[in-house]
Image 1: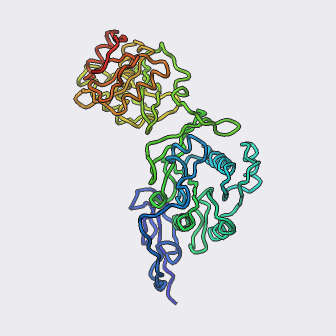
Image 2: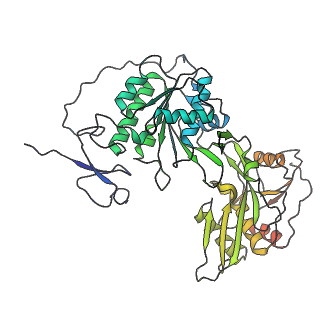
Image 3: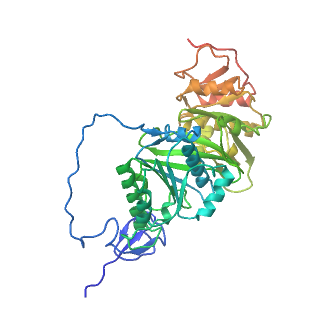
Length: 467
């Protein structure tokens, strides 16, 4: 009798090994290789006879769309992150840390869509129906017509949602709990996750129902399972937040039908998630205007301007190697700014510890924050507070020059709306607003800015007009 063939698959990256090993050759992770049956699920070997294909109908590219291409939820922040609502027939993957509020967000979205007359099915693989109902009562969603099910078998789920009228939205919470009869492995393994996700995506494409999948994240903050799952779906959203703060950010990292740099901001409360229409006020709520080392950065998240406070602390070190601690920004970017300050501006930080923090637990991802970071560092070192009514933005190059950034007019407009009357920005910015009531100072190099801060000469300039 022939010996049954087995293969060993890494649960982190999906690399197939011929035998077990402690370390994966593909991703370098330890203790992630699990034995699986290659005859079942996706990627099964040549043991099965090839199936004859069937003819698929071909249609023209032009044609009328019978239904609205998007389903707006009515939750402005969620619709902003998805590009205007859920696209019919699409698959959306939502990831986030345990307890961050993924199930709460989707329950509120399901209730909002149900109140608009859409048919919504919520399938929970981690909680019983009674537990889901308890959350719905707390969120004020128990009076809606959302249909519930507690099931983890893929075939049973597809048979259930295929009965009756086609649903507009199906929520699967979560993909790590799904298991299929066609895959001979434990739930949560690479084979089971890929098999379940592929079956759900196939149903969404064939019927036009929107499929929302919840995914767990690893210690590194990535969605657990192979990265191929992220390539299979149409949109990937990350629900981020710090447990020490009450706000949450829904960030889009992939979207085939919309922008990938939008965010939605929510505030967590005992009644669920509340939308934050103006996140700048949230991040500037507890600002100390007279403290040295604090600068307000006017940033952009997609099409939305966001103002956030950057805090820096420069202190003499007693260690042989100065310490560099960063929260909310790229540590390698901080090392570059420190090198530019020392090489071109004469600011010696080799004998100082540097601590950098973005207030509110927010994370800055654009290089336009370079000038705000440099200003906060020099302000802390000199012990001089920056003007309280001034914002900073601009990219710093390795030569010390300050480069223009996009969306200057939107950044300044948001600053004026929140009461900031001055701004320090790159020279020759292409889209300075005309007739603005604000005051700004254009700088073309970082040494010029450092000299003004150190000399306490950074005052609000006279009104400047464009052109």
